[in-house]
Image (cartoon, rainbow, N blue to C red; front, side, top):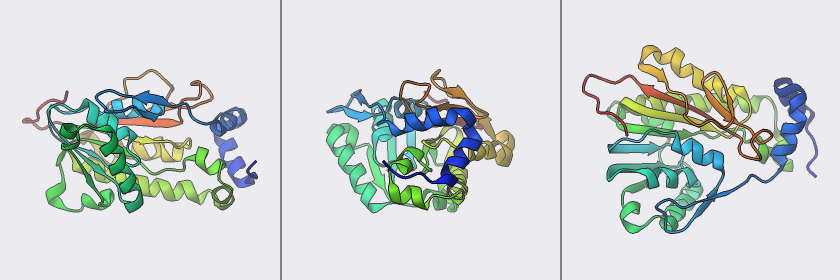
Length: 266
């Protein structure tokens, strides 16, 4: 049993109050895995909530899609399996080690033709938008952002001991840099999904709502279609204590205001 961190307990109790004990217990449990197999050579096991997050992205009929933080690759496979013939996918992962795992997952699960339309890259997605030529490039963007991942922290003695309220604050700053960049990289009319496996509002609605404040009428809230989970300010959150072990997963979806010449998404 991993020791408790009082600061961690107090922080999450302040958010969830009496629900925290039940939620904490459910986070301790191993997440339920679903064999996803649509258009894959072999099934890939990932959580139902992760599938819903990836399926929430509206894909174009042609053009380029960005999976901005793609490793380990489960959501990338969901995107690839749903692509129309005229679509290409850029699966990006900054970490070299995680990028290697991502490539292996794609090689093992995609057939030759589909794998040929997925490119793996290793740039800093937050920095790419600083290049003017890259802005408005992608027809759709999925940002499954690095987050607190409390379920992992709770199971790791060192991570839990090191946790402080500064962690979600730090991560929220990084998440906002990534999300703001993703919106700049998104083409007019395009779809953007922001997802995390964090349970703190600071990293979820706290980050997602800034898109609407910063970009005004250019950013259109486009709530996810799935019914699982609970509605929040900008999206939905699936928590395992109320969804039979599914999650945690927060999903917010946006569209960039179309230009007069924008083609529709599928």
